[in-house]
Length: 254
Image: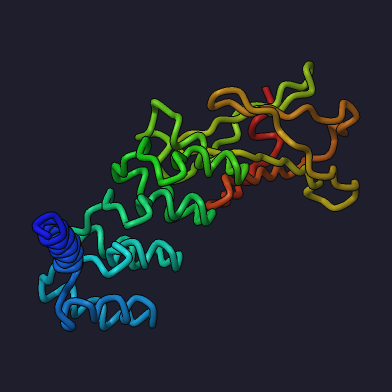
């Protein structure tokens, strides 16, 4: 009989302990209705409401029952402008939800390139693993997102995070080559088109450049008429930014 009483007592203690732990978890994630307003404002894309909320210096690192912070929600909805506002107002970049996801893991998995770049360039941790043991890099590779893979792997993060800027440097007639530089930022694709300035000669279709470090080069037709002055147009992109630059061929001829 005493055994049964002791057993019942132990079960009661364990149940109370489990409930107590559950309550502790709930209390950690619970927030006032006033604080939770930010979640609705983000979902509604209510920029003026978000600005007012941020101006009141409220806690931006609160969590809902799923462990989502306001930043998690803005990232999941691919709202770059709101992500920027939250970060500048003190939101933590590396908070994890109940699934182990950080805002960076969410953005990369969802292929939100601009948001991912912002998080990486502002110091989000890159090596955190989710509940499946996957990092942001694993998801970038799965999505074949060359730019984000490069951002996650580079040792030149400052250079990579700058706005994309290119130059058109030289036209080497003997080698039939036009070359230029990626002055800042990163480009995954560069195409070059030659168009006659006078319109009397047909244009040369876009040619894809070869890239090596920050130098790009294009092999052009060796039958370019010397008498025709071509307009050289270079278009560079990284999946987020696109830059177009033009120069007369005569300006870059060696």
